[in-house]
Length: 123
Image (tube, rainbow, N blue to C red; front, side, top):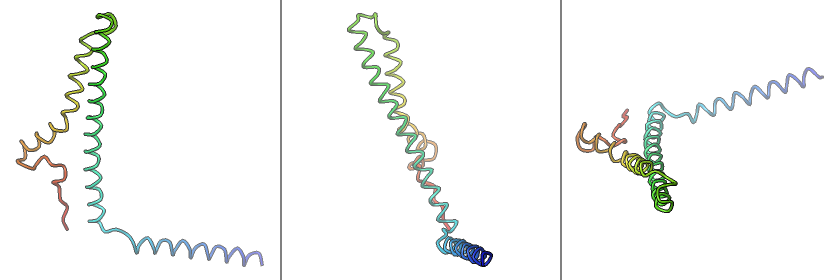
């Protein structure tokens, strides 16, 4: 009796796993759909990198303003002007990088060539 319950339990478990596998095959994506999803993900990674550079640029520009204010209040004793200028230049360059990537792509590949979504996968 104990063996028959164990055998029934294993049989039901096997049937359940088989049904799960068949249901996954029925709703599986084609290779083209997977490639389109991956292409969209790469575009999102590029946008996230550009947003990160812009955020760090804004933070560095804000830090430069505070260093300028600290230098002014402490009459040059609390902070160096060179540090403030480096923050300002670095922040400006990081904030500008998104536009620079687009402009460079347009220069090298022609108008619209710098667009990250220009890669089309067709069947």
